[in-house]
Image 1 (tube, helix red, strand yellow):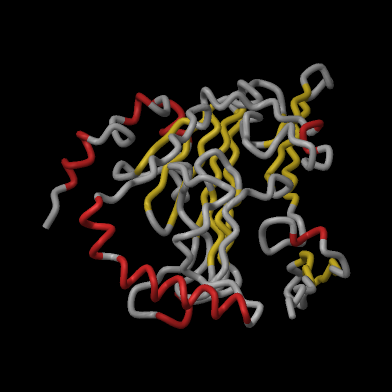
Image 2 (cartoon, one colour; image 1 turned 30 degrees about the vertical axis):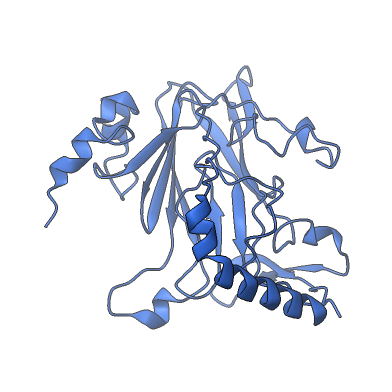
Length: 290
């Protein structure tokens, strides 16, 4: 059995005052809005390190020659049938792996979408055997705040504006969005299968925001644990003297990763359920390669 004291020595774990003020923790001490003590933590303004590629020695390469030949033959055979091999060590990824991952979304065996600690949705593994590593930057949460009197207004995407997918030729105008969050006072906390993002006075200095991410992972219940779902719960605490009108916006491209949202013939359909739940159904037409 591992003692909980091990987390006291971790660089990105407790003590809490290095990441969130005690006053903010007390404000969120209800409805599981506050992150737990045992969690992996990062500030949103920190940058992920690019993982270093490993190399093999000459003798190790000699011992793996037979395996390499078998893999090469398998990859060529799959390519001759118009398929991409799920294991291909001979092809370099266009998006270099980095330590930017957070808790993934989705149930067991149902595919997953990872969410980086800075708020981006990446590592799309929706189709078996394929993976899209690059983030889809249009998938974001945004917030709009106005206070009584109209003198104070705030609007921002709830993610820092120094993302790798912004400012490029194909960002489709995303760089013009309100990326006003510095991330200095915002932190990410991960403890599978949940994650918490705490905005401690950003973008409004008098508003505390907690975003709680939940994916199904229920002991002794594999049916519900394999549901391809995820839930985001927001808790807001107003510490100012004026009333605040807050609107949350969630944008999501009709995509299964990469540039699949540009392939066309996708349909978005609003719905209202019998229980009053409303939402949008995204019908995605997958392009089947011959």
